[in-house]
Amino acid sequence: NAMHRQDPIGLRLGDVAVGDPRAVDDVDGAAADHLEPLAFELEQTDGDVAALWRAKAEDKGVALNVDFDPALSGFVEGDAVRLRQVLNNLVSNALKFTAEGEVRIAVQAVEDGRAVFRVSDTGVGFDAEQKSRIFTRFQQADGSITRRYGGTGLGLAISTALVDLMGGALDCDSTPGEGAAFWFEIALPPAEPVAAEAVAPADTIDVAATPPRILLADGHPPNRKGGEVML
Image (tube, rainbow, N blue to C red; front, side, top):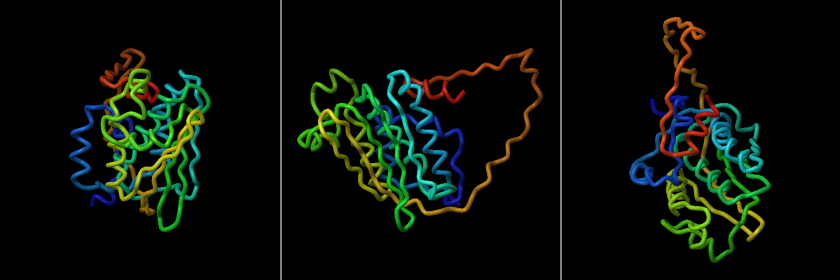
């Protein structure tokens, strides 16, 4: 039953950040299709997102903090892959535009088995006129943004489509020079715990005599950095 499949560990770091143009066709197809609900641990997913971006935050001298509501501990039912894509993209965006201070990921339980996700930063921010454009494809808050920070202007538009697919709405607020916050609310009802799939024991290997080698190949630098951190 798709409702009770566990979130595979291998998916935790395998997602391409949705701001990457390579993800456009795949995400468009997914948004036009259907959700794939499964039982997963929300706190683990939230922590995985933070772990993926912590090295980049440290490199910039920016704190990456997480506020997780204990009421959401345990298993919930939802599309963990799409949720992770949205959070990865929002954190990536926040770090891109924050030179000092912090980026914060907050997850709060609300009534009727729903949760609010909020990613805030102390970065450059934007005004109301710029806000009217940032959710549109191939648009940045300002033309100079692309020249200074890079990016395609796809990430927030794709995140909006994914949040819509999950039954929520992505919104934001900001004051120029004082940072920005993006948030959305979706249904994540409690789910029955799912045991991890048993892995067949491998043949015994003398690691000291034969050091293991790992090939990590990915065209997206933040993904490679996150893989290094987890390994």
